[in-house]
Amino acid sequence: MKQMTFNRWTLALATGGLVSLTSAARADEKPSEVQTALSNTTISGYVSTSANVALTGNYDNSPAASIPFQAGKENGFNLDVVKLVIARPEDTNTWSAGYEVDLLFGPDAVNYNTTAGAAKSDYAIKQAFITLSTPIGNGLDWKIGVFDSPLGYEVFDTGSNPNYTHSWGYFLEPTELTGLQGTYKVNDEWSVNAGIANTSAAGIDQRNTYPEDVWHKAYFGDITYTAPSSWGWAAGSTVFAGVLYGSVDTDSTSPLPQAGNQVNYYGGLTLNTPWKPLTGGVAFDYAQNYAALGENVMVFGLYGTYKATDKLSFSARGEYAEGDSGSLDTGSQNLVELTGTVEYDLWANVQSRVEVRWDQDLSTSSGDLFAGGLGTERDAVGLYANIIYKF
Image: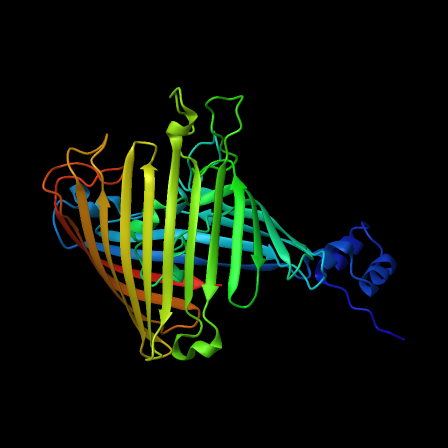
């Protein structure tokens, strides 16, 4: 005779007369529908902390004041963000479905993709989408909901980037989109992606509100090429190009709806080298009618990473940014930045980095390359430390 065992919760309910052990035994023989639905669900995420020392004075009036997610963090210890991911991937069936929900908690969640009309807080939904697989050709996969913009060399999750601080190129790009995205893998080398979203501006369920009775949406597409094994040392290198067109001015009062439309162009390259520990990267961002203010802004970036051992790596980034004279500028704007990062992962599941970053405004006149202001100081040097626990 099979001996039945019960968990403490079931025994407590039986003691209170809320369930019988006989019914509980029958339930234990077959998983419930809830258990079946959750059997492939995964929970993951990270906790990111940092410390920042401003090595130059007047930090708040220097280019460093506009580095993404660094405002207010100088000369102290910081909780950056906590991320929680709940997901269920698609299975092997031809008509399969899944979902993913990414939640952010902490200072870096403030102002990140705030739901339209909602108050700003230390909480944000970064992504929340359903995935659908359709058996067309090699398989056409869909995302519907809120998802990351496909453009860019870097991502929000700093632990997935070569450097701790974000680039100016990241600053220039749309972050999240609310809409529909389709991805098709042509073969092992080529894949394409296209979709439609409400706007290219951050904000879940955001709308282009002028005029209200006209359909205005954001459109995007990209293509990726991955070098095959026949390319020798360059095998696995990738080339990416994409474009996104849509409104970023959701409260425009202009008589022309297109006055609020911004176009983002992106091209990127990740290159393996004959020296296996060394990889390189190139990123090019161009925004036309940036922030719906009539300006064009360009950022060019170079990346390099040397992986000395399984635990130790060195990464470097250099960028040049240039903006037109426009409604925010009194003259042309030019900016450079150099960043060097050392990573040594001593503890299990922990990513630990130390970084030095130098930014300089090359402009001869005061102005504003990015909405938010570069201030009056030309140079900024900062020392950063970052520790991330991934679970």
